[in-house]
Image (tube, rainbow, N blue to C red; front, side, top):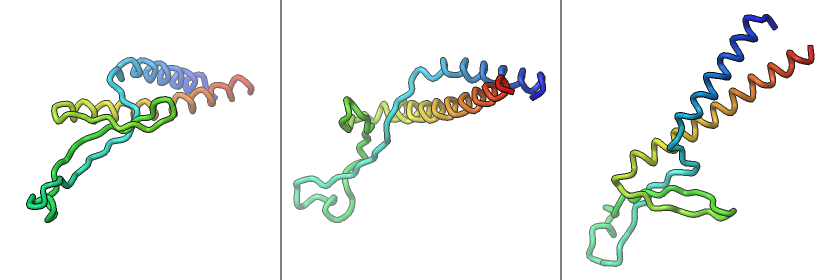
Amino acid sequence: MSSRFLKHLLTERARLLAELSTLSRLLHGSWVERYSVCARLDCDCHQGARHGPRYYLVINEAGHQKQKYVRHAQVKAAVQGLAEYRRLQEIVERITQINLALMKEELA
């Protein structure tokens, strides 16, 4: 591996590590939109026009799946938090690839 490519990997890793600090609102979970039927038999929801959507973030707490209600005013923030978590996963994957390449070079 050339020293130029090695420098490129180290620079990319430093940039990715710096980007981690920008992911301060990340949320680890899954997004659920739920539509429901009410108890009033004369309601239009029984004909297909269901109530909703209601939004939930599904997370794991102590090994148990929990659904956390997300208010309509917080939907944008929650969706952004999930996007930040996906970016975190991408960054971790790329840093892993870089570190493996650097480890391989140390052994050569």
